[in-house]
Image 1 (cartoon, rainbow, N blue to C red):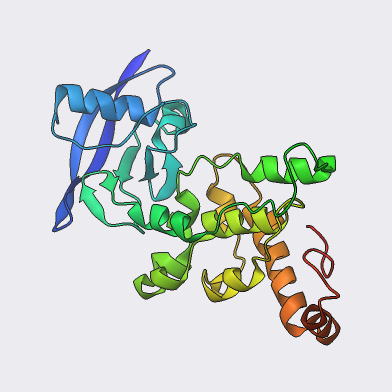
Image 2 (image 1 turned 180 degrees about the vertical axis):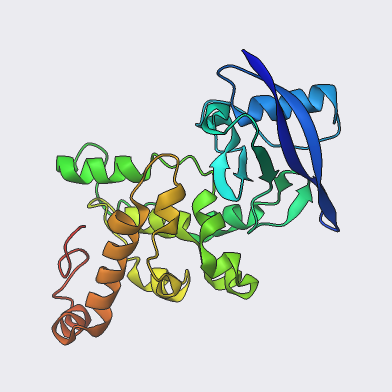
Length: 256
C-alpha cells in the first residue's frame, strides 16, 4: 500500500535557507531516508543529504525529524500519520554546509585532543580484566558517532562560546571509558575537568535520551566521571594521599 506524504525539508546553505514543501510517494516498510532519496530522484536532484550504511551503524544520516534528533535510516514512516506533515531539518548545533548536511568537524577536532590509551608497562598478554570492566568498555564502544548527543547538549547547542572548552557528551564518555579502564595507566580526571569541560555538564540526560545505541551516557559515564573528579579534588584525605603517592588511579572512587 502506498500513499502520498507531505514533507517539509530545509533547503539552503550556511548563508540562508528556508523550508520547502514537497509531496512524495511512500511505500510500506520505508524509512525517512528512503523518502529523501525518492525526493532526490524525482523532484530535487540537488538536495544534499549525508548517508552511508542505511543500517543504523555509520551515524552519517543524523538530522532532526519534527524537531527530534534522529537517524533518518532508522525513523520508520509508519510512526507518522499518513496526513501528517513531516519536517526534516539539519541538526542545529553544527553549521549548515548545504540542505541537510552539516559541518561536524568540531567532533573530530575534540577526538584528536584526547590522549590515547596508555597501557603503561604492561606487555600484551600480561593483563587480565574482570568481566564487568569488559562490559563497561563494550557499552561505550557501541557508539556510532552520530553526534546526536552532542547536538542536543545545551552547553554547546545554545552557547557557541563554550565549544573551545567543552568536548561534549560523546568525548567525555570516551575520556570516562579510558579513565575507568583498569589497563589504562593515565589519570584523566584533571584533563576531563580542566581541558574538556566536564564541569559544564549538568546531567540533564538529554544525550542519553537521543542515543540510537541506547548507551547510558549520563548514568554510566558522566556521573561516575564527576564523582571521580570530586573525590580527587575535594576529599582532603584523597588529596593528601595523591600528593604523597599513596592513592593511585581508581583507588579513591568506585569504577562506576
